[in-house]
Image (cartoon, rainbow, N blue to C red; front, side):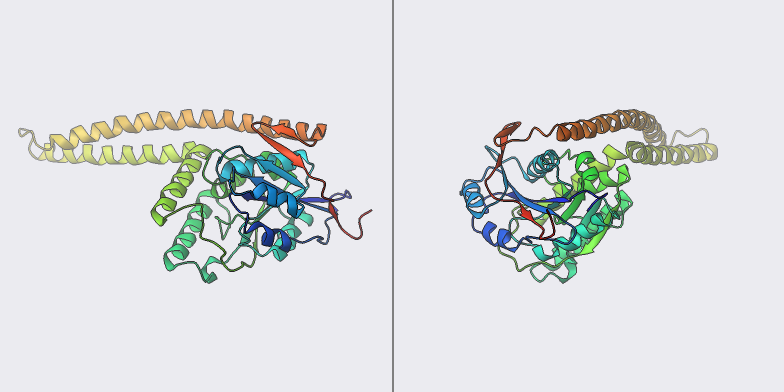
Length: 348
């Protein structure tokens, strides 16, 4: 129990054409977890064309969200989190539909939250030990996680892991601005909000299909690299643009001093004019970027206020408890199936 109240866990599974993989993933989910009184499963069908939603209903999932067309993993994740908050979930565990992660480790994920020792728990796959990961992918995973740790100031060891647990505070406050994936941006955002993030070592299952999130290593680098840079500029604009302004000022100053040095040696010879021109241009650009840093910091202050209002609105909306079968959440619907909630044997 959390603060003496019964604990409700929702396991959400974003899906895109996972008709063949979903049954095994669903079958492995735990029906009871120590410290958790109720467990429900939510499938977010991201515009599948292979009958994933029908398979989910036949399996007995408790909630189903279906997009009319494919909107991407980030949109599916956000829609699921919003619905989980409305459904009064105390903890949400996100897992992949391809059964990549060992469902038996869900209990390990939620343990720090039950102990009130974490707001977000990330499943560490120990990517260096995954057999089907190529050498290049292992190196990229290691470097990418190190970059996110540096950008966010956290100790996350597996930043791209989608196997994670969140408490109500994290569900209500975290937002995703990009349309590609939620994994990196939510970690950086969580760090700016002061949420407590923990790592838990988890196991993985043998690969059932190739990853659909990216088709090539260059494409993965391009999209995830852009997300990290954009997130850093979004959440720390003063530091980001301030650094660029300092570099431009330094370049301009060095080139200006170079021109003055040679001018002092030969005042009657007009040489090294290019250094003066480039140096003045760099200093002017430095002033412009410094103004951008100040403007970005002001905008970031307004963004923080808007995000706080959004979090409050989410909590108020969840408290109203207007969820019912067929409730509309924008362009999609949240369907409550007839499946019975999985309850702990000790629950009333």
